[in-house]
Length: 189
Image (cartoon, rainbow, N blue to C red; front, side, top):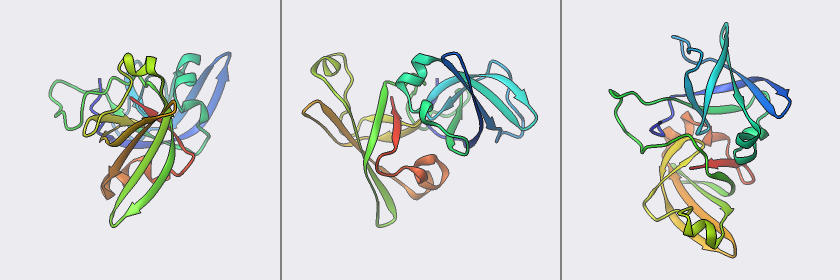
């Protein structure tokens, strides 16, 4: 379980394909290191550390994870948002995030708004998905690339769902939101 409060960003330094899996090697931003088997949210996706080598670590994403998330689009040099699993002693500053991404959304608007940032995203939505609880509500919580945010302006039209969020400057500068532009794919939970 995670809180959606991003601790660090890590840069992808190597990607290896092994059958239908992808191994992502990232620069480790944690001075104390990471343990093998540790669960870390990468853009909101819970992945297990499988290897540590010097100042890098490696996680593996299987085919289903790659299909449902934006991880398959990652390139060497890209930055991902990181959050280590919550501990009992940790403050719950965001909302409970499982690390099980529901689907990918596409940014359709990104703009600065007098000191803050406004983003609007579009995702697939069907009556069946809505019946099963896959929708956003005004002032509800959403995790976008692992960042806990408050929903504004949710809507559903013609098989598409829409959600907007407003980002304060701190969040913009300290997460990979600073790289999100129109057309960027993000993970939704």
